[in-house]
Amino acid sequence: MRYCVSCGSQMEDGTEFCPKCGVRNGESVKFDPVRSDSGDMNPAAIVLGILGILLGLFVPIIGLILGVIGIVLSSKGSVGHRNTGFVLSVLAILVSVVSWIFGAIILMSLYGY
Ligand SMILES: [Zn+2]
Picture: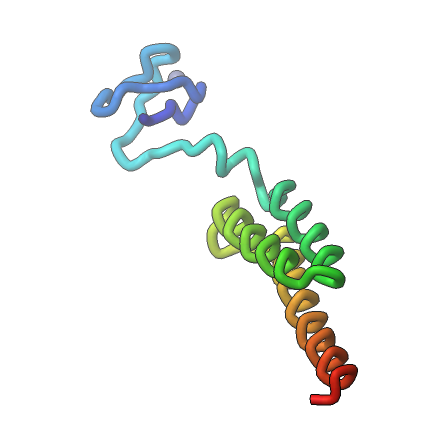
């Protein structure tokens, strides 16, 4: 499905002129409403990143999973652009891994391994 570059209404594939406003749309022109609306802010990825950081301190595996999901979501929003959601998700993974390692070290020292 293609969208008119002028008014944004849906156009049949293969049609050159918009049925609503009559503006000519080139074959290569594609309008993606989701991408243009999201900008560089991805609320879902930001929420997942923050949750991942907080949960990663206590339950590393959940923080890790949330961080990975956040990275996937943020990379879908704007390709090749490091946005807030991406940074927070990477932080969530780092916090989870660090607390996992520290947790393992503490457990090991407690049980004398
Ligand atoms: Zn139009």
